[in-house]
Image (cartoon, rainbow over all chains, first blue to last red; front, side, top):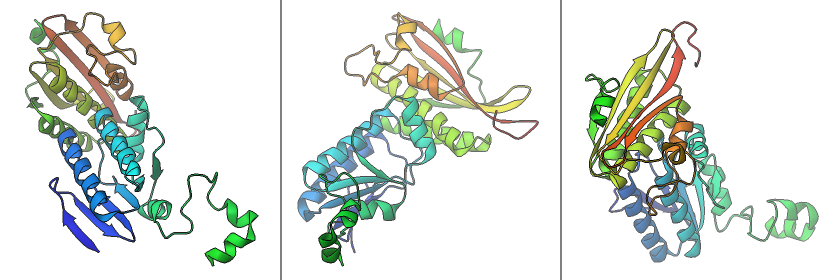
Length: 149
Length: 152
């Protein structure tokens, strides 16, 4: 596992073909924008195909920060890294709902493990954008099961 | 003028933050989180209170010349809670009713998610504003009942 501390002082870890960003401090808008830049540079450098941003240590996400996070996910996807946001707490999502915040089409997962399985490039369970639902192919086309096994 | 209107709310024992940059906003919001924990609010309510503080602080930072955030613990006869007072010497709001509707902002650069959201996050919401003078917002989030220990 390669570790690199970015200018934002938040570690960006490279593992299993993905980048993982565990955020364990409350993010100011400035810090979030710095982190966004660091993440995008790191994707460019590593050609990572997956990005997991874990916000389990974050309790305060206002509308502006939410927008920076969603934009980061969108930009990372454009750079070829499928992105998932993990660890949003009930309080954070309740707040974003009250703020009438539109999260767009970003992927989210409760746990880090679930997040990984959604974006890991070598994971057969990683859903492709064309597929309607994860696991559907296994039931319907036996060939896929053999290839997966 | 606005200052005087706010005196009933902003008590000296609260934490007062001058809001001048993004770090001030997160300082106020983080301290709001701590205060709400001390006051016994549930973790979801703590997040909602701190998010409201963050929104109010960000509004001051972005749209007012200068302003302060004051947070403090409050209680009435039956409940414990937390309060935030946001005072600024910004452009003021001429039509408060419109400002509380979603999509309204006094400047085009704003995200258009504003006071209506803060009002929904909180349990009590009071606003006074005068164009050219500034705005004062007092809002509270209640936590556990003093008698039953249940969320109010």
